[in-house]
Amino acid sequence: MRLFWFLWLFFYWQIVDAQPQRYYKEGKVSYITEKGDSMARYFDAGSEFSEGYAVVVEKGQRFFLNTSLQQAFGQSFEEASPFREGYACVRSKGLFGYIQPNGQWALEPRFEQAASFCGGVAKVKMQGSWYLISPQGKKIIEQGFEQVADWNEFPIAVCLNQTWGYINAKGVWVIAPKFKQAYPFHHRRAVVQLGNKQYLITRRGKIKKEIEEEDDDEIK
Image (cartoon, rainbow, N blue to C red):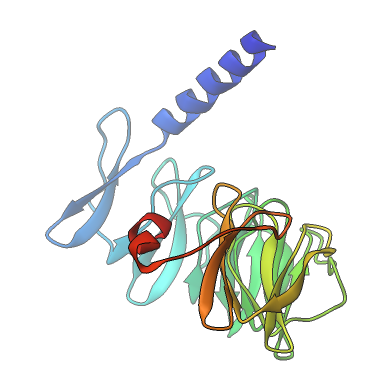
């Protein structure tokens, strides 16, 4: 098992190292390959490479570069996020959708707002409410929310009837909505507000401690 993980990490870093690297010159962004080949073209902004592509901004439009430093997919977008978990969130004609690494639509634009996939789930806004969806575009739960916080680990903070709680990746409540405010979990702990006080809680909703003023820097 250790050999498997060692080989996986070795090949992963080989792929990462093979991707072009971003650099800045006079406030502009460009890229250079591992062989030292650099672009003659500079962009207003640009992301690091992720899953074989980078997002660049030029004259207000976003498009993708492949590892050959060529424009990918033959189209640009109003907004675009780097690929994550095999999908990139983009906006076209005012609506958000998701494309695959081959440039084909995985989910055609139909969302008012949307964010990248994380843990196999993405948040999207439709008809004024936020939902969690699968890569196939299926709602994880039919319930819509007023707000859904970003997350890097589960459970996810959501707001219903102006009260915050947490759900898991299947849309099941793991901490019932009872907080005035709730923030994303980080290292299995999250900050919540009850009344005028803030607390640090576990993923089961157990209060670990009240946050005092001197704790602010540590919590942040």
